[in-house]
Image (cartoon, rainbow, N blue to C red):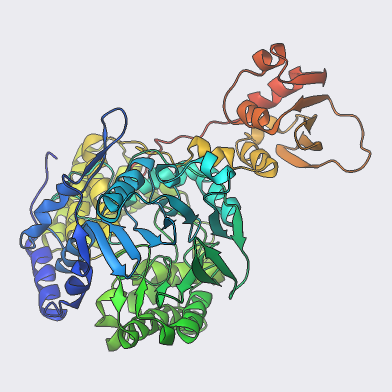
Length: 631
């Protein structure tokens, strides 16, 4: 990457302070992360069918060196742990593939085969992990798959470990918490374009790996870039205590909706005295509102579900593991680990509420809150993925919304107009740049980033401001303990220097859109209606779904696409389309030519088919390359 700098004296000093302040002599995590090692994938590279690299764990070999001044030592430590890759034994009959994607894939041996928990993001990495397991444990068939929750890094690689045919034949049940499919597809479709664009920042998609670039995401090294897939669940878990036996393995489930995902569950293996915590207890403070965007999570119920897990399972467990990071062994140690995690989320929730009820705003609480020493000194509570700062703001947002209560902030100018006025009050861009350079030299990078943002949004072509802003964001990245903050800062610097990189990977793969229900298909279409252009339009269409025998009506009025199932007599529509659900999806989401489908007899029409052409004309295309650090 051209134009990069080393760490300034202030960042070096801050990172040196981290070394002095934190208990780096405690290496228990390294012992746990290395325990049970069987074999690594060698070389640590996974390619797709076209020969393109979709995963490269060897690219993190630089982490074997001493921490450089351009990386927070705490993040460097976490990244070294996350970069350990290969097949590991957790306990008798339970193995994990770690370091071959953002998440872990767990393999539980049954009577005749192996049950897969959370098959990574991509078909390619999941297949490589399964092959590594089989190389050392035998060619066992996959006799079940469990999705612990509805995020893509826990189901996307499913077709790398099993097939739709095996699932349909009943030889490989797919088990998931109730609500899984709805949440999985909604997250990747409804706001999928914006989330994917921001995820490129969150995981440092364009950053070179190394001391000046990407060192990891805190939760894992990064995301793989292969093909995501989805096979719909065949068994849904809907209550805590529900027990399912798969391939002779008894599993007891604990429902935890609204924690790390809207649909999530922990589970316990009584015969192995092993507890899987999904993503509810990992070796980091997790996100309550991820930087890529999501629904705000509930730390209050998160804490309560951790208490429930401790009370139900801890005394009966010898090991706790999750779908990220490394296990914790020993009943006493795992109980304390879960308790510290519980205390962390509960403390952040309660203290944020205490402060906001005294009138403090989210940004004020985030700046002032302090964790108890016992929590602060536990490595597993550090903000490598989530952070105290943005999690406290998320809690404030959950309860109070975006408005801080001060009428002065109720109706502020949007960024560009506000920036122009700021510059005028500050004496113009030249004056701001001169003062920003002084603040940069003093190490006040947070302030420099804020004021230079005004210059860039008021004068997008100001090369001097963009160059200094890139340098500033770079320094903020070098000092960040949080992996995703580092990636955001360094990606901002990268795009200021080189231009937008767009969205390297879309999570809206065909398997995900294929899982949309009819209701969700029309939801996805409604979100693309250009409201102002459609204000005067009046279009009523019926959609007769031939393979289900249902009729769904869409009505465009006042720029809103209303849709609902037809179960009573209604006035006649402008047109009726009779087609299968698959052809409905192909027409509205897949870009297939409706006229050709009508000519082929796949779609039958009564009424004015031109009304659909008119409706499609009101659809607006999302932009996967929208600007982030420039207006």
